[in-house]
Image 1 (cartoon, helix red, strand yellow):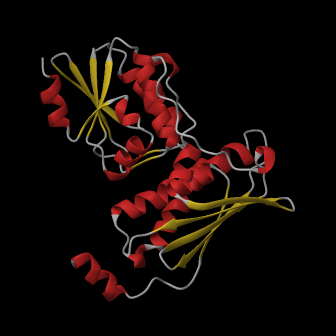
Image 2 (cartoon, rainbow over the protein chains, first blue to last red):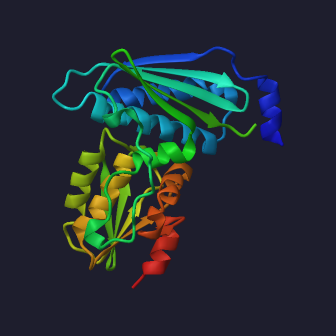
Length: 156
Length: 112
């Protein structure tokens, strides 16, 4: 109840987009996440919503750092645009690194846990989390850039 | 990466004094855990109550720490904050580790 009131006092979500640009690195991803959450503060999101946003954006940008600009390649730009829309947030993430293998995002299946102790997975969770938490995940290679778009639904 | 360790009988408690276990510090965390758990306590409780955020790299580092300890020892997680809990639940990794809401409940369950 108090939560809803707080939302009403704050008014509708900010109509403006949030733009954040970084040069790919794991610490720059941290910085981008912190700036994004600061910019979204007027939305009065709860810890559940904030956690979902931070997690999906962390996985998407860490994938870019790891695979689009892999070690040995020159680090490059990652730009993030967040657009408030009815029922949630729309995201566009661009980079000019290597394309997604086969031109599509991984399906993001859950990891297989019915394996021997020593075979338990230490990775492969990232795309599962993105596909599980985000909606309308679409990847395009446009000219020499990767463009990933998705939506995150917020309870209102 | 700051880990603090204390011994409570046969149980070792390792507390993480960082707000994040993410891609930026996953390797550092893994190395620090390897050192912290060298003493060989059969049960290690990893107190995550100060950790607000973990990503898939951090999750992988915790799994790697458990595998490094070996199948005869157990790594138990305590004090998961909401986003950390969410990552373990969604990936179903909460079924691989013992997960306790607080350090005290984990201690009560593992007291010799």
